[in-house]
Amino acid sequence: MPRSVLVGSFTSPKMEFAIDMGNPFFNRTVDGFLKIGAVGASKVLAEETYDCLRKGSISKGKFEDALKKMCKEGAYWGTVAGVYVGMEYGMERIRGTRDWKNAMLGGALTGALISAASNNGRDKVIRDAITAGAVATAAELVCYLT
Image 1 (cartoon, one colour):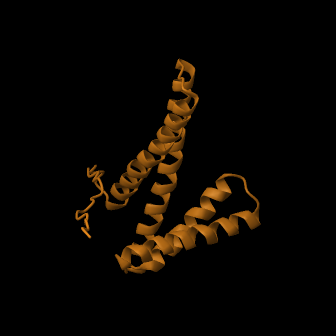
Image 2 (cartoon, rainbow, N blue to C red):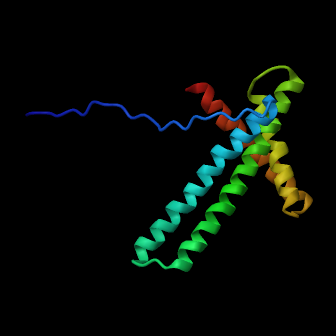
Image 3 (cartoon, rainbow, N blue to C red):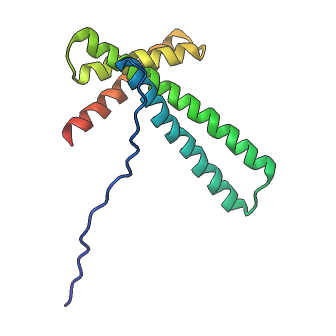
């Protein structure tokens, strides 16, 4: 019996650019804001495109609403990423080492800060800090494994 085998590789797209703010802290924070903000805007673009294809129509109002949502989500995701990257970098500078603990502390502080800024109660802020710390730690450990 003949067999066929597919051989190949997939590469992820690269989005590389550098903005020099004159300070490594600001450079990393702005870089995180822009890259993850673009991801947030792309998420909304994909969702809105799906909705338009499903409904079979698009209007000027729907298009304007989609653009507003893209900007809002991009800014929100970018802000969270910028705060996280800044916190992680700050932890690295304070502790003098680069490891998963910086991600844990940076994630926990970012989760608490974003939750508190959203006027959540104390228990919700603590739960969000724990969740964000756990997610950041898991993401950092996955990067170490690859």
